Figure 1 (cartoon, rainbow, N blue to C red):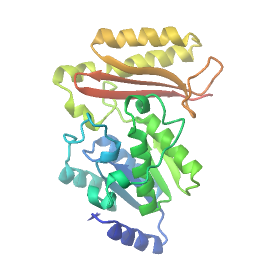
Figure 2: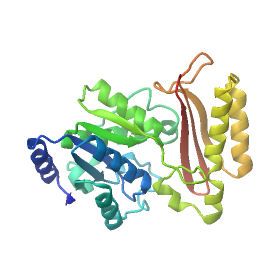
Figure 3: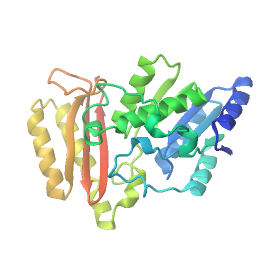
Figure 4: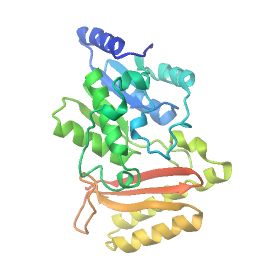
Length: 283
């Protein structure tokens, strides 16, 4: 696996692979990789001949009071994991390489509707930062396909809409969330949890799953389901940010007539913000 830091080196390496007729996959990350990330890379090796991963902690998607300064940077360990997973090229740019004219003068890409509410409501500007940096990575690599985890369900919806609306010839693949044995979705931020908080954290997914089970049994009183769910989170010691039932594609609030639903939740546990979801695909 080769590691490059500049756009020039990145494009040269990808051009060589493409000249050899190879199909290119991209797996964008912010590093501090866990087995959920490596599963994406492994899936990419099954679908493409040349896998590019990126590690970039993107300041444009962090709010002023968020954890940009303390977000874990573990490059050496990440490189080893990517190598073992079959990655061919790793791109690790600096902020100056990604935003050479400064972030204040950077063109911003905004995806409407699906970026609004949920995490977009709790983290103003977050998805503008995500869609902007992903657009830049897509233009730099010009992959045939890109793979993202479904744990960040709204992010996946934003990127899918971005590619559709901007006519980018890139296949977007969402891979199922990788979970610990107790159901907690793997996340780079789980390392912030204390031992006691880690034992409590799986409650978020259990509550989401209980709502999903009720929906699959035909329950239509969404307001009651969500109210009971929020109370269950609070009783366990979590502070709900949001708990919603949405249309899976548009992420608009769901109605009892909708069939393709997703239950999404975010909650604070101590200083850590957890997110999770359950997609109830229509039969």
